[in-house]
Amino acid sequence: MADSDTSSTASSAATPALDAHLRIAVAQLNPTVGNISANTDQVIEARAKAAAAGAHLMLCPELNIAGYPPEDLVLKSAFVERCKQAAERLARETADGGPGLIIGVPWRTEDGALYNAALLMDGGEIKAIRYKYDLPNYGVFDEKRVFDAGPLPGPVDFRGVRIGIPICEDIWNDEVCECLAETGAELLLVPNGSPYWANRAEERLQVVVARVVESDLPLIYCNQVAGQDELVFDGGSFALQADRTLAFQMPQFVADLGITDWRRTDDGPWICESGPKAVLPEIDEANWRACVLGLGDYVTKNGFPGVVLGLSGGIDSAVCAAMAVDALGADKVHAVMLPYRYTSDESKSDAAACADALGIRYDTVPIADPVEAFSSALEPLFAETQPDTTEENIQSRTRGVILMAISNKFGHMVVTTGNKSEMSVGYATLYGDMNGGYNPIKDLYKTQVYHLAGWRNKNHPDGMLGPKGEVIPSNIITKVPTAELRENQTDQDSLPPYDVLDDILEALVEDELSVAEIEKRGHDKVLINRIEHLLYIAEYKRRQAPPGVKITMKNFGKDRRYPITNRFRDR
Image 1 (cartoon, helix red, strand yellow):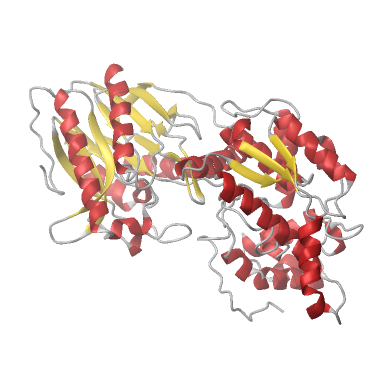
Image 2 (cartoon, rainbow, N blue to C red):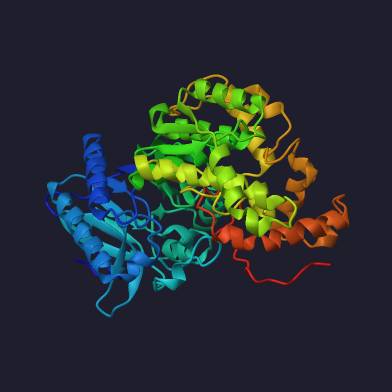
């Protein structure tokens, strides 16, 4: 086994040196964090396909053996040791003379340091190890907490080709690629665990362009495809030639194996002569696919047989139901209407029509009896008070209890259906409509939810398990939104129009603008102050909310870490 600073230059009889042709398989796989054995089997299966395609080398994503991000799992010595054993198993697989492997794994050295590492395997051995130099520590990333930073790396030798292996964040600054170029790298192969948010693919492309310009080297970017708690990894692996033109492009949101052919030129860099040419989806499709992948992987990887959700006849639950069917199939989605005296006939018919369009099971469980029982039990304590949001919340919490009971009885996970606008200003009930295991629209503002509903009715992306056509009845999209917790209630009784609210919230949350700056955008200062206040006082609710797919630059969770106890106001 080679150490971290050198690589074997000797080629075994089974792995002769390459001439001017290199066939690289790019494996954008979907690992499961902690499922080391299954992740390893997945790599072996992909390698067999790469071998059948005549590949010399297969590039896998960052920390592929462990799954990414493993977070504090890597602090458990047993976990790291199991990952090492799996890596050694994969190395032995390469003794067959087939493709070599570049794969990510947490790696502990004899001095006790723990690294985010990439291993080069070939000829039955681990030929070289390289450590991640630039550990991200912002937004959703917290790698400095668990990993040691490695030294600036040099290239590794693979059958006579000098390959640089910067790991993910290592290409977001210039040091690592510059060092690799100066020390003789001919190709840059980058294992990545890069999560999705809107327009992320363009951001990655610009980073890679900068590294190629600086190094004059072609660069292959391999990214995983996975839903992991709040994060979605969208794949979209690609490469740029040394002249910055696109060499190949793999699809987003689909686990895939791309076969690429590279030729060493007589007087210049390696050139990619063939590879996949996928077309990346537009932003609406990308956001929809991210929500579907995040929900689907969360449900299946955590072992739930399906999902159950309250279908109210409103836009949020309808969109969540459509996403659940696209992710899991209609047979794994159970919708329940939970009507009370304020539930309109229109809502009942809209919910039934939505369930019918999606082809899902639909049941009605009236909540009048349990709500009245709660009210009766509380009557002595509430005798001298007037009805208010307390009574409204009893309705929501009753619905939550019933959905959780169905979940407990049949094992289906409850899907929560609150959007980012509501979660921002606290228009969600703890232990009521916030009950559940996962929320696919948690990071979508209300205006985005409406937009995606209309988009899905007109589009049916490949791989979606739901039906084509109008899956969300048009009346759900066009009617005035209401929680129906009292007579003639609408959302705009207590909130500004959603286009106004969402613009203010994006300025406060995503852009961290001051009240004065937001006022210059044409909003009323009193309203801005009120929304800011609601945003801050709802922090305690958001801390108790279920996880949901990250779509924006700053989701409620790891991206935005505001204190619950907070008396600051921008007056």
